[in-house]
Amino acid sequence: MKLSDFKGDEGMKVVGKLLIPAGKLVANKAVVKAYSKGLVHFLSAALENCPNEMREIFAIVNGKAPEEYEVNGETVLIDALELFEDTALLRLFGLQS
View: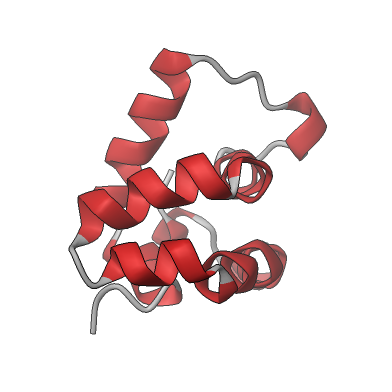
């Protein structure tokens, strides 16, 4: 799902839930350093250094609680690719203007 899929109050709640894990990502030194190398490096560093935050982000965008979000290589890949396509979500991370 994309952020634009969440309408009205649901959209506000989703963005509100995303702010904390997104803030933790951009506060992580390894993730910030990787950001300067591009989106793929940012995502790689985020998955390696902040797996709990990434799980939470993927869960929120998929309309699930983090503890309900089933993760495996395929779901991570699919959710990561969807992240690349969502310009609004990338803006939340400061990755796109």
